[in-house]
Image 1 (cartoon, rainbow, N blue to C red):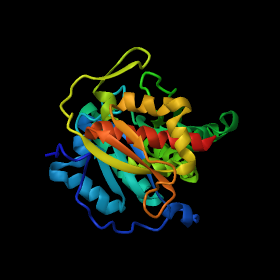
Image 2: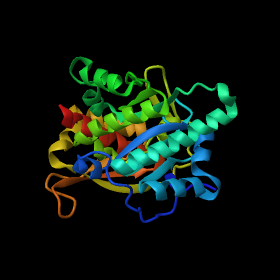
Image 3: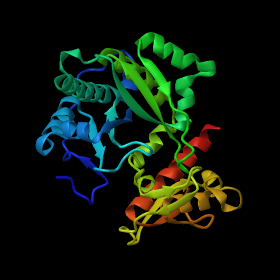
Length: 308
């Protein structure tokens, strides 16, 4: 049974055992702690969790990676799919990803019989600021990934219907082996991007989008239900040099984030830093889902601005 209080479903903390040695000589890259996020249908999420969390526990234990799922009905905007986040060293993530995709593929074949197409689809969630690295100059990187993996790789356009959303979907189509090769190549490219890891702090911050009533151009931002009106407060740190980007000209960015998320946002005065850092205090107040949405938008604003 999933706890409505938790921001995600995850099996209990298991001390991750170190998995098999890295698959390539570049051990520094393989050991660097990172993450990957992708979509699964609600039904598929159940088979990944397993009875009483048995499957997810087993996959974590075999891979050494941590596997987390967004809550039931916490979907990626514009879809009815939940989010899985796998974090750990790169070789651990690859192992966990392979276990999950093989499980989903075998279940799909069981349902469809032996006629099922062995080429399946997986959709990765990638911050817009990291998509340029995957595409490469004139599309050179993505072309080389397609040639190397033999998988089809497509990056969605940015969805302007969701104000503040800067994640895009990277769809991989192919056999399990082709998909795993493409994931390996994409993950190695993402791990090179210093801003990519900033999004680990807010992996499932889409709840606010699911409960908002957006007009055709993303106008609005009115909550359809106010079940979570009780106020909570969270303070995060943002580097002093990035505060201007979060605030925007005439306060426009911060007003947009506040309107889209439904949270109130207060920034500490110049020189008032988080203890032991030069990060300004950004206090976000509102319902849990409003706070998560606002935090994600702020982190994305900092990361995308840092790319410039």
